[in-house]
Amino acid sequence: MAAGKLKLTDALVKAIEPAGSQSEFVVWDTEVIGFGLRVRARSKTFIVTYRPAGGGRGVNAKRFKIGSPQSIPNVREAHRLALATLGRVAAGGDPAAERAEERRLAQSTIRDLLDRYDVHLRRRGHVKRTDTLSLLRRRLKPLLRRDIASVKAWEYAEIIERLDLATGGTGGATFRTRCSTFLNWATFDARVLETNPLAGYRRKRDTRQERVARVEFGRALSDVELSAIWRTADPETAFGRLVRFLVLTGCRRSEGSRLVWSMVDLPKGRIDLPATFTKQARGHTVYVSPMLNDLLTHQAENSVVSDFVFPSARTGGPMSGWSKAMDPSDKRTAGGTRPGKPGLVKASGVSFTLHDLRRTFRTGLSRLGVENEIAELALGHARADLEARYNRDDCETALRSAFLAWDRHVEENIRDATSAPSVFN
Image 1: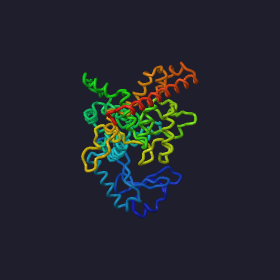
Image 2: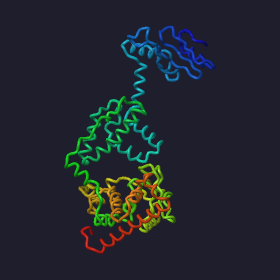
Image 3: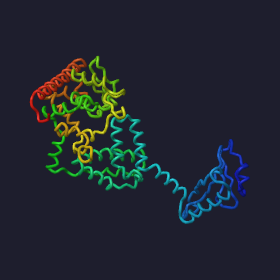
Image 4: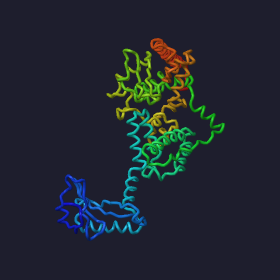
């Protein structure tokens, strides 16, 4: 059958065969003007054609899909839907544009866009993907069902200010950085925003008191403090061994928690972190000192079966829940009929963060006389100009000596602190 005008009936709709070799044709109904049956190679669809109200004949006609014969029970119901659609047009509506907007909204909620952003970061091998998405989903939770285009800049600013108040300024800055990067992606990659609402946001200038507090927030620990933390970190738990690992290596928390056994070569005395694993996106080698060798050997013998060196005791996957493990506010022991075990901060008597162990490692190497260039390489701050000053063998020898010197310092510090009275015992 070719295109034309006929009175559409249930029998006729059923009798019309798909278009076959033809691209498509339309059988227009003689009773409802603008209503017809579009027939394609493998499908049949009821449609309505119209021009948006006020446009006149100078505006191109639009076709609006009502449904298929499978979804609409009969032609009579299709007539009713067609007339309702044309009524919306007469009242000034544009059904096709409205449906397109509905589809856009369905794909433009913050929840859906975060899922797409997750796929984007995974494809790019983003090292901090899990942490980034977790932070964004938690902080943007009240807005997840909203169309991202409807969220105003002041709403993001309110979240940042609340985090600044709760964390002394650090939480807001971290969220702003990661959220702004997400919004840039939504603007230029997903193309659902005209501009990034945070593009012009600037953090308020710190007062002198805030600058002092910020400097004091991150620090290198004293030998007494480091010894207290080491002795408090329970060597019979994966978390305790992870803390001791961070003390000995200066690795980042994420590098230790996601370390897998395939990266560890104890016979050769080295741990090779791949480029996709580290923050600086370059491979980094940690050389295994005697205490670290004992720690890893003990971990291999006592850990649950897992690819991860320091797996979560609950899931067997990467360790998480740092706030609860550290518990600087001591919420675990407050209230309730069965107070929880104190976090590492209270149990050790030292106010610190896990990143302070990395600062302590770097400061300690300098105090032990390790050259700045080698100390930077030991920390993973590799740069071409640093590596160029050493050939491969000399660099490895110097790095092994640096890790060994720090190992001996930690061991002596622990032994001296153990033999002397301590307020932390």
